[in-house]
Structures are given as C-alpha cells and as structure tokens.
Length: 337
Ligand SMILES: [Zn+2]
Ligand SMILES: [Zn+2]
Image (tube, rainbow, N blue to C red):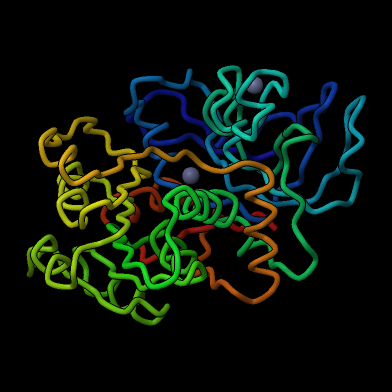
C-alpha cells in the first residue's frame, strides 16, 4: 500500500510502498477513501510542538473509509462499515477523565498520525472503539474534515457557552474557522469573522457571518469593540498576535477559547483586566466520540456545509506548501478512493 511518511522533521514527506498492516486485538483495518490535511499534520511533520512524534510515521487524523478487516474483540463496528479515524485514536476508558466525559484529556491516549500511524495512506489501522461511524447520508470527502476541523470547533463552541444573541468572534477563517462560524450560528450567535485574506472573509460571509474584519486593513479589537465587544472569541489562528487580539476584543464576562496551536507558543495576558473584567480563558482540544457523532448528525441533517478541494496523495508536499502559503480557502482532502 502507498503511504506518505515523515522520515525526518522539516523534510519533504516520502511516498512509500508498505505492507498492508494486520489489525491487532481491538483494531480495525480501514481502506481509506478520503483523508484530510489539517495544520496539525504540518506541525507534526516539522516537529514544531513541545511533545513530538517519533519518525518515521504516517500523518493524518481525518481519514474516512471502509472497514476491511477487524481484529479480535471488536464488536462496535464490522466489515463494510464506513468509519472516520479522528485525532483521538484511543483512550484508556478507565481513568477519571475517560469516565467523566473527558476522554480527550486521557493521559494514556494515542493520537492518529502523531503517536500512532495515521490516515495518509491507502490503508490505516484504527481502534474499533474509537472510530466515528459515518452516517449514510454524509459524503466521505465531507466527513473527513468533520473528523477534526468539524468536531474540534463544535466542541470549542460548546465549551464557550455561546448562545442566542451572543456575538462570537472567530479569529482565523480556514479549515477550522469555516466550521466554527457555522456551529456558533447553530447555537444562535452572531458571528464576526477575522482574517487577513479577503477571499476567506468572503467565504465567511457566504456562510452567514454577520460581520467580517480584515485584520490587515483594520484593527480587529477596535472593530469588535465598536460592535459592543465579543461575548466569545475563538482563536484558530496560527499567530500568537491573533490570540492577544481575540482576548482584547472581549466584552466584560467574555470567554476566550484557545484552539489553534501556533508553533510560537507564548502570549502575554494582563492579570488586572482579566480579574476586573471576569474574563474566562479556556483551552479546547478536539472532541469526544459523542461530539463527533453529533457533528455527523448535524451534517446529515443539512445544517452544515463543508468546503474542501481534492488532492492526490502523490502531491502531498505540494499540498502542504499550499496550506503553509495560505493558498487554501478551507480544507484539502486527499482522494484515495
Ligand atoms: Zn486536526
Ligand atoms: Zn483515560
């Protein structure tokens, strides 16, 4: 089988011909149809973050395909089922996090395309208990971005507490942002979308954003304050500066949710204003299996739109460059069907 492999950090990925893996106990072998490219995959391939994967490894945590074989003990899915392989590849199921609805915080978790091989290949192994079941009405190429970009922003909106009539500021309109603004609107909020590119802001408008701010042309903090300030700001951007702007755009009692993971890991927040304004700052990482199921249900019900372009896995390094150069409006999905 063909797979895109990170052999060394910061080097082009290598397309390798590997043996089709055998599912071990609890595992399933998935024949991949569609596999999304998330910014996290690029950070993984560059070894950008404090906790690094170990090369060689196969990235990819937005894989969708058909279960071809199941290992011993798998009962939740069977051969022929269409499933999604998310970032949360496996969690222990027994710790305090796993048993209180926070499996995404499990300290023993395995992450697809990071600590275990992911979905940038013709086949991938996954754990039967942790794959998402893709409903019949959902296209595989739309299901792929939902498995990370969708569930991650759905959860971020959930933990933000955004509700009807709130103003939600979305910093960074791309693969994640175009989903985040839809989930905020489903919660009843008005959205102000902030980005550096007019093309992305037009996409946000097309998806229903009430306001847009081009942060190259306008100070987003002043623009959002002029709207009364944001009740919630969700930062999906790749620069720490946007996180600081997101913080400063909040009204009193507002909530800032960190979701994007810039390679540059630090921002400065003022203690005084945080205390006096009763500001909440939260981190949010992907979503649980139930969150993913809800994301698929919303999509099957026609409530969300997924924007993507197809690429061939052979062009993986060009695709990465396109994302790095911000040439991609929403999401790239590798076509392995
Ligand atoms: Zn991702
Ligand atoms: Zn656990």
